[in-house]
Picture 1 (tube, rainbow, N blue to C red):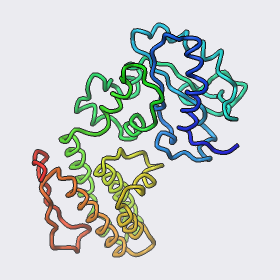
Picture 2: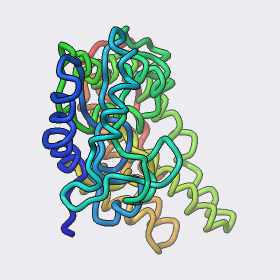
Picture 3: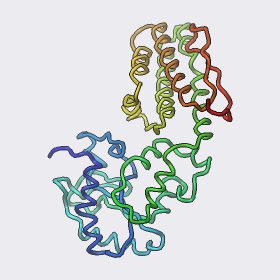
Picture 4: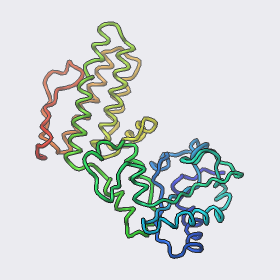
Length: 313
């Protein structure tokens, strides 16, 4: 059967199957529906390869705390009425609870979950963004998880916009938290940017390449943060970074840094990538513009960074 992007499949599954069941069996139930709980389809990155596991027709349903007692009945109605397939795709799966597992028309598990809204967020993130997001919450939450819950889609929000409001609350860091995260990322890079050449000087070419690979990963994550995009985990990091406007020079420079050339070629590519991302840092206006140092013989130019409390230029 032809591949259908997972978000498109999920939206149609809600609109054509799940919503009619709820209207018929639970007509007075206020609920929200969407897909926020993980998977490449939430980032629009699923392909035909994705369909071999943890992929298929699925929808998340959320109800308010006042309706939590009805959740078992809603689940029972769905168990009884959901079809065995939708648009040619199996709707039943074999495997453990938590993810879909492997498609299996003979299994009883399906991809429609029902949860109390605030409780689901607490289980997923450790806090409910509907009650506010503290600095510690921002810093403790993996960016992959933030990419998921703010990605995906909302198909219906019959809870007065409560599901949408929680996603909006997590759209991006507050300015001072953003400054802190960027400063931490640059500090991490500064601690390693001089090491590729040092490794090469003592004949450790493999070690030099390992350091450059780590720096390339850190730079791509930093670049996404500078462009207000939540960095995904490594599987999709390069793909998402490559879709940024202006990413081409950084990708070309990192290709040189990671390529088969000697350490001087590696260093030159790393310098170019670092300089470009430093320019992106300037463009945020979060601190005073950094003046490039005159010495280009090190792994990157020296940039003067303002303290986190500095006003935008």
